[in-house]
Image (cartoon, rainbow, N blue to C red; front, side, top):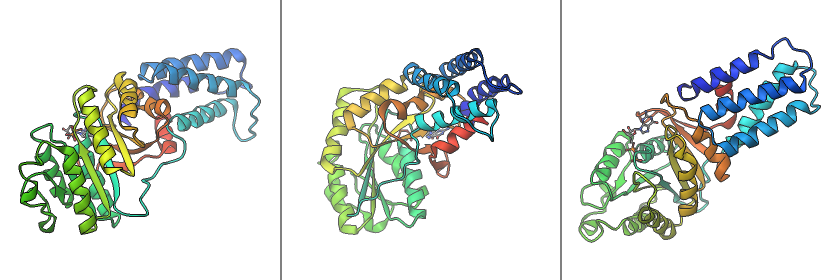
Length: 315
Ligand code: GDP
């Protein structure tokens, strides 16, 4: 994966130095752990996560895990793999569908993170899985956001509930004139109205796109928190651009405090920036990564599997 290309090369080189060795000496282990530490830090993985990671790898590599099938070098690779899976959240996480539909999924994150695009991807994917999703445009901050969601909804073949007349992708989804005027500018009301509409029309998943700013900002966070309170979503996905770099951890913590998200979506994994900071997010917040977005097209999207990602990083 392009995002982790450099990290992969560094780790693979480190492991190469262990090849052909018999039992590893403490000095071998320390040298290896030091290289892993540097590679992770250079990839922008956060310092706390790196410290924890390397101390676990060191402890296990020096311990007496015995495997007849693996030589010492392979054992180190195995340990690094296991610990990578652990920081990426361990088990794969799937959407927790409500027993009492609609299942409500709210999207939160900074502007440009890829929320609106993700809304379309998620909607298309859910529709393919025989769900009946409704997209909701509760991002009224950016003039273009509603239009953008409509375009995405049309591409996905999924209706969009929007605070203006005629803004919907399906004839019967028209919230009509009642939503014009008063509702514009009040995303909490739009979200609430959308919930009622979804229940009446029996959509089984509601995906609510919310506003983002370039930086974390109190007003934005309050708005997102108000929407969360009003619609009581089953899931809140924190959408984060894997290319954001060192700000990832602070941003994730701010959103965790602000909207208490239930899972993380990593976007732009197709980019070539160092993606390590995003890898820290699950570990730092204790919230698993649920989906990965890998391009601008609506099909560039996949459920996230920590074990597959770890293997990709190590290959
Ligand atoms: P929002 O402000 O959070 O709603 O972000 P948008 O959905 O508008 O996305 C911002 C930009 O990033 C757009 O140009 C998208 O096409 C682009 N984008 C979104 N997801 C991805 C992705 O996974 N990979 C790439 N390369 N671009 C993406």
